Length: 127
Image (cartoon, rainbow, N blue to C red; front, side, top):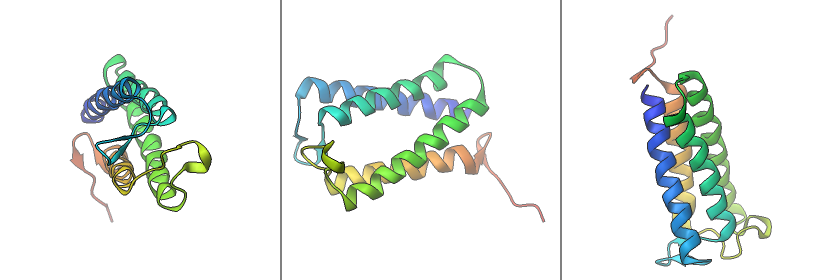
């Protein structure tokens, strides 16, 4: 249940960010957050997927898998953003340090929620 709630909330946030980015156009929002068209589309897609697994279905296993996989993707984008800020020409304005930190934070938080927390509580090792 907690994974679906997290997915739904993050999905809505990403959807709003994607819509805001489309409305404001390409470039940097307040000189710290990239809102290029590719980034907006990715936020809309990932936000839609997360909102669906958060609100549109009841399978916690599916939600956990989607949140975890997208966590790995966001983590990789955060790391890659430091190395190749324009992401091979896909992000014309280039990722800022803030963008990279946000992507890393979303990635780590997704992974923690999906694979470390089970049913709202941390898992413990059994030996």
